[in-house]
Length: 198
Image 1: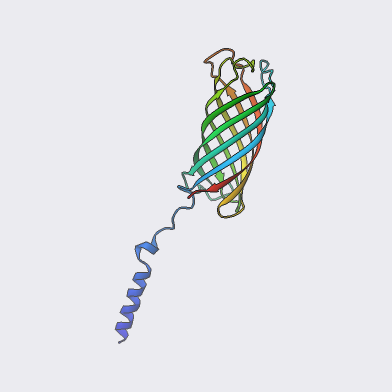
Image 2: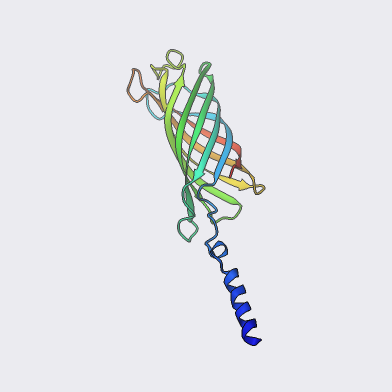
């Protein structure tokens, strides 16, 4: 009878360690997708002599991103790498009414060792369709490129939703495909919200 009880206990123990329960827990970051919306006011920055315009306006950035890695490292700088794409809608009020619409792939590194607060650094670049040729003296083309980089932080409000604040530097240029090509720069402080899809 004792041998039978031992055999049952051993079988029960093997069931408890079945492959389904003994696997490493699923990743918390790889494949995690989020969508978000950020809005900010454009603050002009003139870095070169030929940049006379002061771009003032509003920027709207809808975005999607996916986590590529689980947290790398085991210190304060531990973080996850993500890849995404971001839309750009610029409504320019000064020096004249103008607009720009574009899309930029982006790379993001999110620090994961601060609990609900998740600081990040990010950057991207891509094509920008505008009506700058004429109204904006620095740019002789309606087809331009937007390159940007910045930093910010997400604060998890719930398991699904996060608030986002950040700051980025942006540069608009036609990459020498037309003349003039003085370039335009602006700083963008922004606020936003994001939600997890999966």
